[in-house]
Each structure stands twice: as structure tokens, then as C-alpha cells.
Image (cartoon, rainbow, N blue to C red; front, side, top):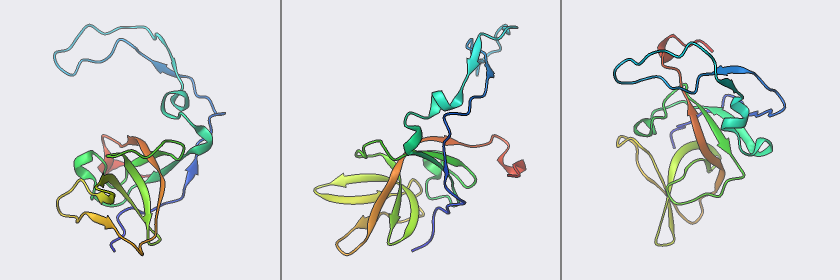
Length: 152
């Protein structure tokens, strides 16, 4: 099986760290320009906004393009919550026979499939004898708009 996601080190979230980052609630127009608000409305703590279950949340970096049509590509950081229930069509980090992958989970007629979001990759049917563990549900994807220039 091709390794489609490489764990560059699991990092647990730390909700005790608080950063007061300016947050302009008025929004930025993606159409025609609008008058700029020249004042900050509040501060935004990304831990509070992005992490519902701090003790059950970790971050993982993606390597590969099997989920590119879901907006998940190489270099992206996934926020993964182990406390959320896995539902049909959830995007999950899963271990299949000790190899990690990120896929959409589909349950059809008591069968489980791990489905890529790129037609170049095969659907994985979880069959008897395979060892599969769900490592959590992907809640957010963080990627850089200048990913080609990103040096982490």
C-alpha cells in the first residue's frame, strides 16, 4: 500500500496557551472592494475557535495528493479530533495495516470503504483480516496561500 499521509510528528493541542490576535469581524470582500474598517473589533483565540476537545485533539502534516479534491494537499496541517464520532462521509485519519492515511469514510450495506478525493487513487474496502483503526475525525485543514514559498 502506498503511504499517502506521513506523520511528521503528532502534536497535541495546548488550549492553555492563549494568543491575542486582532480580529476584524467586518469581513473582507471577495468581490468588489468595500470601505475598510480602520479599527479592531476584538481578539480571536484560535484554540477556542478551532479546538473543541483539547485533550483529544492533535495536528498532523499531510504528504500526498489523494485528497486534493477535498482541498487537502501536501504540506497542509490537519486538525484531528479523536473525541468526535465517526459518521458516514467523515474525513478521518486511519491506520490500515499499520500505515496511516487520510480518507473519507463511507459505510454501505455493512461494508466500510476509505474513499480518496482524487480519481487517481483506488477506493480501499476494509475487509476481514485487515487491521483498521480510526485515529480521529479531521475538523480543519490549514494550508498556506503561498505554499510553494513555505519553509517549515
